[in-house]
Amino acid sequence: MNGSRRGAVVKLADPDEWSSRVAAVLEQVRPQLARTFRAYRIPPADSEDLVQDALLALVTGWAQIRDPAAWLVGTVRRRCRNYVRHHFARKAATANPALCLTAPR
Image 1: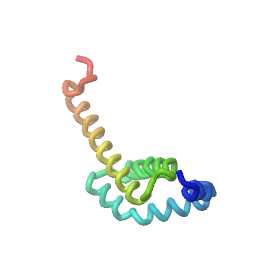
Image 2: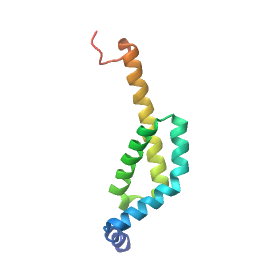
Image 3: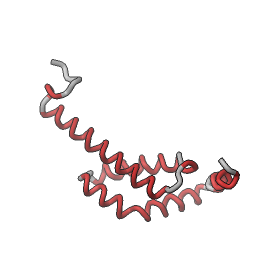
C-alpha cells in the first residue's frame, strides 16, 4: 500500500467524511439499485436490509475498493441473487419437505 492511499484511509477516519462519502456513492447508484430490486422482486424491507449489509461491507473494505459505486452495485446484485435462491429454496422446502435434503423422512 502506498503512502497516499494510506493517508486517504486516515483522513476518512472522521465520521462526517465517511458519512458524506458513503452518501455520495449511495446517491450515485440509487437508480441502479432500485432497478435491481425491481428486477429480482425483492420486497422493500428486505431490499433495505440488503443495502445496509452491503454498505457495512463497503465501509469495512473501503481501503481495498477501487470503485466504490461499481463495487456496491455488484455486491447488491450478488446479494439479491443469493436472497432469491434462498427464498425459493425455503419456499420449496415448506411446500414439499421431500425435496429438502435436510428434512426428516
